Image (cartoon, rainbow, N blue to C red; front, side):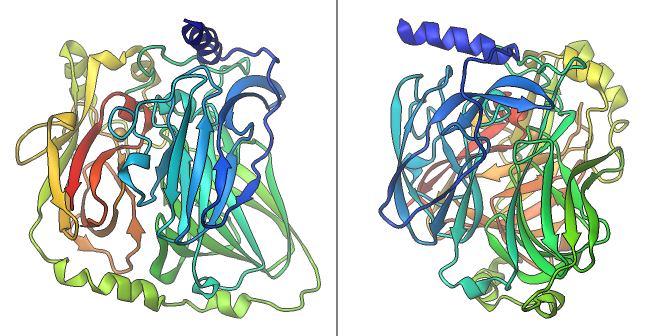
Length: 499
Ligand SMILES: [Cu+2]
C-alpha cells in the first residue's frame, strides 16, 4: 500500500514536469574507478536540476546527472547493488556489455522490475574495451529523459592500444523538450506521448547541462568519448576549424583511424573521436543537420608551452592489428547467405493511416533521417495505441514478440535489416541487440571497408544494412529500436542463444 502511494505522488510530479524544490540539487558526474571484485552501489534517486535558470524535479543515479562513470579494467567483474529511490519501478541495463543474461536488466525477461524502495544486485562483467553506458529498461521515454544514464568506461589491457593524447573528455549528448515558459513538457502516463517520431527536445544538453565548455592549450590532442542518450534525436557533430579523426565506436576501435568531417550518432551509439586543436581561438561543438544548427558548447584554446606534441601521431592514421586479426576469423563468413531478414515498419489505424500514406516521403530528406519533429501536430495528437511500430521477421511474417530467433553459441549469423520507405510513416531506427557484438558488413549493398564491432546500428529510411553476429553469449536477449518511444510502443523482439 505504501509503495503504491509513493509511486503515484512522485509519478505525477515527474510526469507533469513539476518544479518543487524538495530534493537535493543534482551533482555532476563523478568517476568511480573500480577493480576486479569490487562492490559498488548505483541507486536511482530523485533530484532537483537547474536548467536555463529553472529548477526541475528529475532523476539521477547516486544523485548525479549524468550518473557516475564506472571506469573498469577490461576483464573485470564487479557487483553493483541498486536500491530504487525513485517513484517508478525500474531496472538497469548495462548497454553493450556481453555479460551474463540474468544481469541484463530487462524486466519480465531477465528479472522482475525493481519496485520503489526495493533493491536488486547485478554482477557486471567488462569483456571488451570501449565506452558503454547504463540506463533503465522501463519507460526510457521518461526515466532516461529525466536523467537516468551514465557511462561505463572499459580501459584496454594495453593502454598503447590507443594513440597518445593530452586530454580525454567524455561527451554525453541529450535534448530536453521544454515549453515556451521553460517548464518541462508532460509525459504520457500509461503510454509514451510523441510516440510516432519520439520526443524531440528543443534544448540541447551536453553532460546534462546547456553550458558545456572546455579549455585547451594550442597543440592539444584531445580524445572524445561520445554517447547519445537522447530519446530520438540523431546528432551530426563537428568542430568547425578543427581536424577530427574517428578512432572507435560502440565496442572499441575500428580496424584503422580515419579523418572525418563530422560524426552521425544515433540514440545509444558511441563514437571515439580525436581532435587536434592547433591554433588559439574559440571553437564550437556543432550539431548541424540539413534542417537546423545548434552550438552544443565551446572550446577555448589558448597559446601555451608544451613539452611534447602528439600532432605527429595525430596526423598518422594508425592500423590496429589486434582489431584486424580479431575480425579475420569472421571474414570467411562475410559472403555467406543471409540467415534472417528484418523489416522495419509501422501499422497505423484507419483514417490516420491513410492520411499518413499520402504524406509519406514528405518529411525526410535524402539522408533518410528525420532530424527534427517536422510533423509536430501528428506527433502530438496521435496516441500510442493508434499505431504499432514493428520489427517484422520476413521468413514468418511475424512481428515483435511474436517470433523468437534461436541461435547457438559459436554461430556466425548474418541479418539483413530493411527499413521500409513505403510504410505509413517511414523513419530511421537505431536497432540495438543485447548481449552480443556484430559487424556492419554493408549498407545498401556497398561493403564497408573499415569495420568496428557494434551493438547498435542506425538504419535510415529506405536503406538496408547487413550485419554479422558473433554469437557468444547464451540466454534470452532483446533487440529493439532505441528510440525510447518506439521501444515503449513495442518495437522489440527476442532471440534465444543456447550453449
Ligand atoms: Cu524506431
